[in-house]
Amino acid sequence: MRAISYRRAGGPDVLELLDLPAPDPGPGEVRVRVAFSGVNPTDWKSRSAAQPGPEGQVPNQDGAGTIEAVGQGVDPVLIGQRVWIWEAAWQRRWGTAAEHTVVPARHVVLLGADPSFELGASLGIPFLTAHRCLTVAESLPDRLGAGALTGHTVLVQGGAGAVGNAAIQLARWADATVIATVSGPRKAQLAAAAGADHVVNYREQDVVAEVRKIAPKGVQAIVEVSAATNAAVDAQVVGMHGAVAMYADDGGAEVTVPVRSQMGPNARWQFVLVYTEPERAKVLGIEDVATAVADGAARVGDEAGLPLHVFPLAETAAAHQAVQDGAVGKVLIDVTA
Image 1 (tube, one colour):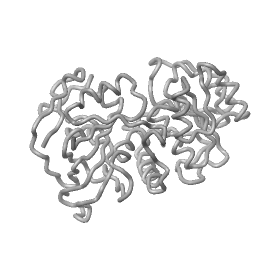
Image 2: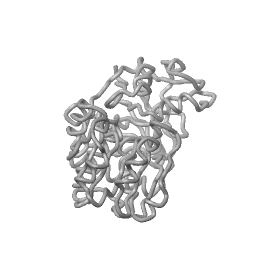
Image 3: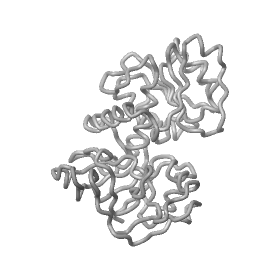
Image 4: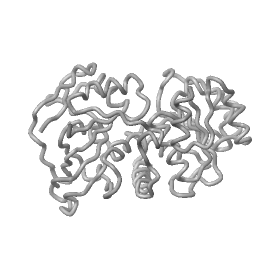
C-alpha cells in the first residue's frame, strides 16, 4: 500500500511516500481502507517534536473510509461499513495518511450511506474539541443535542477556524445563541455561513460592548483559541457559572486571569486537549457528534463556512505546511489520488 511515514522528527520534509505492507488487524481492531485523511495542528506539531518508533510513524489522527477487515473479537458485520476515524495515530504507529490503517474498533464510528468521506475526515479532533468546549461549564449540560442549549449564549473566539466552525455548528444545532469573533470580512462570511447569529470583527469593534448588548448577563461558554490575547475580554463577558474553554495557545503560551472578578460568577477556566480528556466526556462527545451527523447538522465546504483544501497523498508534506501556515478552512488528503 502507499503510505506516508517519517522516521525522525522535523519539518514537512521528513515525510516520505513509501510502499508498505497493509497492516493486519489484531484482536479488537479493524482495518480501514482510507478515502480521506484530515490534517490538524497537532499532526504537524507531533511530527515536529515527537520521535517516532523504529519502524516509522504514519501521521494524522482523523480520517474516513470503509472497513475491509476485522480482528478477533470484532463482529464481521462491520466489514463494508463506511466510517469516520478518531485518534488513529495517538500512541500508535498507523495514522490515516495511508491507503489502509488499523485502529481499535472503538476508534471508528459509523458514517452512514449519505454523509461524504470529506465530512467524515473533518470530524474527529475539531468536532470533539468543540464538543468538550461547549460542555465544561457548570451552567450547561454535558450532552449536546437538538435544543440542549436553548436559552444559552455561546461566544466562539475565532469563528473561522476548524474548531470554531465546529463549535458554531454544534451550538446552533443545540439551539444556543452564537456570537463569533473574526478578524475580517471574509472570515465574517465564513462564520455566518457556519450558523453564527452574531459576528463581531474584533479589529474594528469593541468585543465586550458588542457581546454585552446581546448577552447583558454574560455568556455561558467561551470557545477560546487565543487565551493569552483574549483573557481580559473573556473575563468581562463570561456569565454566572460560565466557562472559558482554552483549546489552543495561539497568540501566546501563558495567560493572565483577573482572579477577583472571576470569583463572583464562579467562572471556570478550563484547558482542553481532546486526547487526554476524561473518558466519559470523550464517549459522550463521540456519541453526540455522530448524532449531529445523522441529523445533518455537521457540514463542510464553503456553504458551511469551512472551505476544503484537498491534497493528493503524495503531497502530504504540502498539506502539513498549509495547516502550519494557518490555512483558513479544512485541509484534507485524498488518499486515493
